[in-house]
Length: 40
Length: 531
Image 1 (spheres, one colour):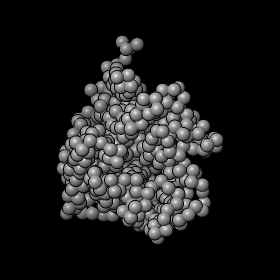
Image 2 (cartoon, helix red, strand yellow):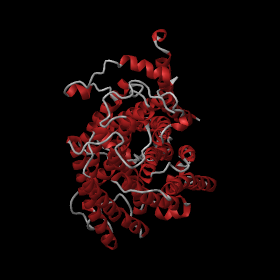
Image 3 (tube, rainbow over the protein chains, first blue to last red):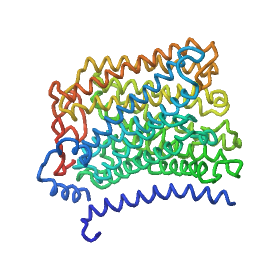
Image 4 (spheres, each protein chain N blue to C red):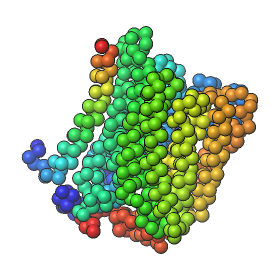
């Protein structure tokens, strides 16, 4: 799939995926932090 | 980098087709202008719904005693007025402006992720239909305040899971919108447009988008935990089960304080576009404006504790939050002084966008000053939970954020529709709004200082006079906004033809003014060269 993408499109896709991963990280990170806190 | 991207897209778009016909144009919209229009229309509808709730609040508070609504319903109105105005009116309005203007200002053919753009808009009508439908379920709408503090919010009736789901949808929409803005700005700028040449509106949105990505998931996490506390027996915030309700407040305000800046940074960008145009001078200290926005964004992450002074916290924490909060006045002051310096010795003219921008400059600063007062710990102990706080944040949000949005619409709508609007009517809209907004909110400072608590449907008789004044201001402000809707509809339907530069005689800068008015459905199919 990625081999067929132009470099600019690949950059757009990768930037979007990276930012989405950061958002998901914050979401799950805070929940995990509180689960950890409730056990220690 | 930007050149490759723009050329690729130009290749695909060389068959210059217009919009689809009928409802499909809007349902399957991928064009940034169509999506921007939908965001703005949606935001206007939400503004009137949230405004109607505010009218209920001010009508009930016109006199002491209970006359129109039950206390429970009053609390439902305050809670949902806030949720609708924040997530339904102000934020979507800024996203709508971003959709319309960012591609046109950076010389891009569209947003980088058009289908995701469609999805992030169409989530919103479902989210708010769900939120508003809670009016019909047993127990009514959520009534524990927009801050959703447990354990109070956990006592919400059947509407609770609907509220949580609606908030999740709003958050997902905002995150997708933010990703789109960042990816567009970082990858789709026209050749020659380096970051420092980028218009201030785009800069303010770039920084806002990073804030959104950092904090909306935190709100989502907090409400997910509320949901599991309510339905799945967890005790994240339940003291009886070993949890900590104050922890919710920390997490909420870690989201909530940057959220305040999410609602004001794009307004800063708009004001930085309008003032130089009608002062006929370049923006004073443009680079320092960018650094100031970035500093405000950074500081917004470390000041959340000032919302919780009365909860009790160590002295060192109180001092830290107080000092860091007051530090925000420094970059904000840089901005206010730069705007003032832009006006200095300018050749000013007072078209409606300029009037709204000038009003913003004065009235937002009043909101900023009362914010500095609230940052002082012992003073906050006195003002917390009073109408002083209500006056403060409404000064920041109404003549701040909302006036900036209205100024932006008056500034750019000739570019969108190709028609000038009725200037006389727009000036009436401005003057009536400015007078009534002060009649509405200024007396609330006095009420707060005299000790009137917020979020109550009844009050002691000594607060009657200023409440009556405030309510009259509220009704006047609400009615005045009908003028805004009339002016916008008139401009869409026809009017004097706008030139490409629109503000002839003024000196607008930015690529959007190089396009004809109305801007073509597909603009910058070939990337412009920026000198």
